Length: 192
Image (tube, rainbow, N blue to C red):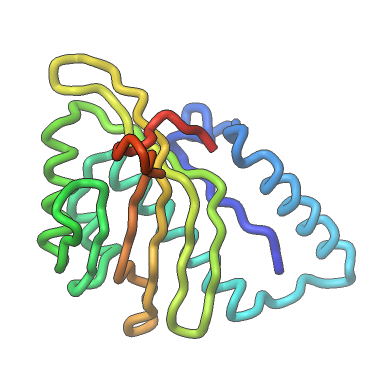
């Protein structure tokens, strides 16, 4: 499998021009660049497989999520989800069904924060012909409307995609934190 890395203009480039990858991306980027160099010396570039093409498309979708959240772009997020998305988000209730319900969660976030930060790391994809998922860790933070800075907490994130009319759309997502069973509370101070 060809190594993949998801870079964001907001967190992995200085002034949107100079590559300064985050610590979580360095090893994946090194592996990818090693593979590019190896392929370039093999006597011609190989055509990517359909799986490699689809995996790259899914990683671009995840980058789109990150960019849309940071820019508070509700319409950008709308284009990434299927209309029948089912979301097991961190906020109650147990599930949010449909695109409007999912976007309402993002409206709540955008209302709460003056400025939003979002990062993902350790993304691991699994891609089939017309379904795929990618899981990793995400952290939402930023500056609240009253000026309070919030670093955020790391959560476990899984996005499930379905290829609809040739386009990978999120049909299910799940966000969770580990549970202290005896205490009955979420554990929110862990880091990947």
